[in-house]
Image (cartoon, rainbow, N blue to C red):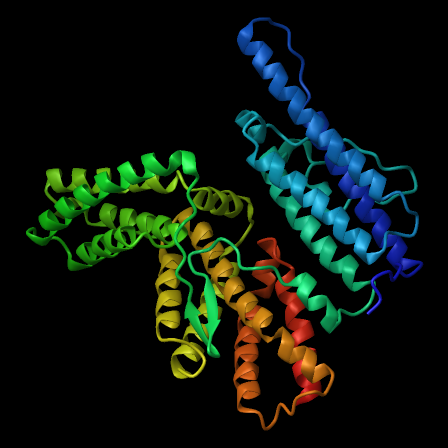
Length: 443
């Protein structure tokens, strides 16, 4: 594989020009949309001015760094495009998660500042959204669309540089990410990885004290629910949440379970005595504060808030999850029974109504991503050997198991591919193309 393949001339160079113009247009428009003057004085205004200056500086730095990379007329090379998009996504994450950016900024209208010359066409949909003065979107929405535009452009422009090859796989497929479930391959079978949540040393004592309080209040709540006439489903939900807390399990899974438990509590609240209903609300609130102390939960919720998924995406992810669960359940040689059971547990969150459905869909996408990542990274050595004709894949039992795992990964990857793209993971579709091509060439 050639890493330094240049863009093709003509259409591909023109495509790069459009992308460069739109990225520059967004950054300039973002800067101008935030720009404001300070006419009063005092400590509070001085603090606001400092935050404003830092905000403007990271925007301007992103623009300058981008233009340093994108100064070519025919377009950067593949390795350079990787660096460009990493820089831009790093800027987007820094801006969205920075504590010095004034939260009020996100509600301001995104005002398009045209940099289009007379001979250029109008901006594409991503930028065109801001040209309608009567229906301007807020900066928060503009940022979501900008991230989606970066991911789709990255995928499209990399593809124009030539086909992806097996050698690209290690670079494309990330390590497992923050999600309700992570996986391991042990003796050729997928198992659920048991990993305690990461805790900052400075927060360790506070977290332990909070957990001890929640343990006591949870046991009291369970005793009261068990002695009441509440719906058994509510009792089971609280018991599951309490068990996860006591086992110090995956913090994202705990956070999602708490949301689901809270929704169910609201559903059956009319059937509960006021005292027990109050205990349940307090218990859910305590756990919300508890999980908020973990960086992994904060990272997960922030990323979930930035994605733009529709009802069709959620339905697509739900269908794919069902197929993966069925395949894992029917083939115990590939997976420990706990794997489909745990994925099914996460899948149930997709039924939670309201704004939480986006978070649940993101959780399911990340879970399947982790499944696909763990399998593909486990199978890379095998794929390399098949490319070199080192192994006889048709007669080797271990090879057949790996092929079975890779086929499962392909099912998950192709099923969530479009939704994963919108969730900021174009690698899923790219990896599926490479693996499918290699398996087809062997069998």
